[in-house]
Image (spheres, rainbow, N blue to C red):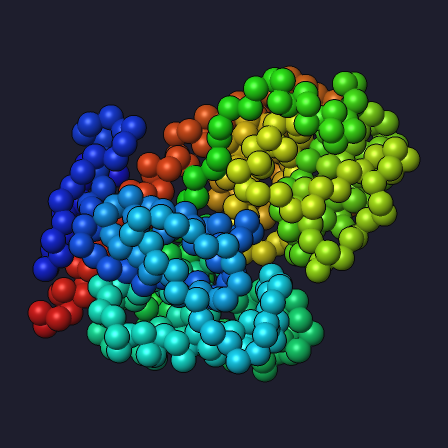
Length: 421
């Protein structure tokens, strides 16, 4: 990395070392005085994938000195932080409990966001727009000359393919062309780890940055860990296999449950703990009991996740071969627990054979990978230690803030050069 970032054009910034970083290593260009609009077409704030990522973005922008407005859905927890304003749209229809992924509820709310955005941009002058996922479409339509950063948290055509209607080839073709159109008309793109190649095929000129999120890594004392294991019904001699996250089909929770039946037959002391499911996804497994060896924990606040990860003998990410990297893996690595994950390009952004056990995305391979690690404590400890070390060196908060600063420096520089021409 360069030791400092200097803006060009009319951006007025100064470089300030990031907290906790040795002087001379690298510096982040501040965004003092900049007013940035983040458009988040999700319930904000909620403890789930994309809203968590958006919260990290807003916290980083605020730490760099920017003022931030978030245009978002009516649903979500308010956050009271100096410099942050949450602007909630109003919908004609009383819409609540917006699910993860495509839904007609989201379509109705996204139309409302577009209408609200058009009025907002007439009233408030912003220095940049940070548009998340499908919010990029109305942002392109109404932004005028405001610099636009497309926050591509997922490959939308791939995500929508899970619905039968969107698997029809002509429909997929249209969705792919629409996403290419959005990418070509964005000044810069921040994409989920694993999607950079897809972005560069559509836009060869815009700066492309891959999200490398910081993992939560607070220390959990042994007493708290023992108390939680007891609360979850995990005996002193039992081996806890833990999954955290939502139960959407692409997460592979059903695959993990089927694999666990084989694991339990080979390792009777194994127990499966699934943290984070919602009733809207249904319960893909029978009620928890001593016979099944499974414990289901409904969604918990994000700040509690390190505690649940700390009770694990193994952490698991069994998701399908989708293009975007799961946030949970960044936190798994910081937790210093051995990881078993499906072998996919998205997981390989952070993981390799030196930091995790990577398996084919099927029941048998997943079961074999977990059993092998349960039976080899020395290997499990070594993998966990190397994952933790990688997290400390490459995935910290400092790196995240610096990367965001770098992206906005280039965004403003490009716009300044364009205006000069």
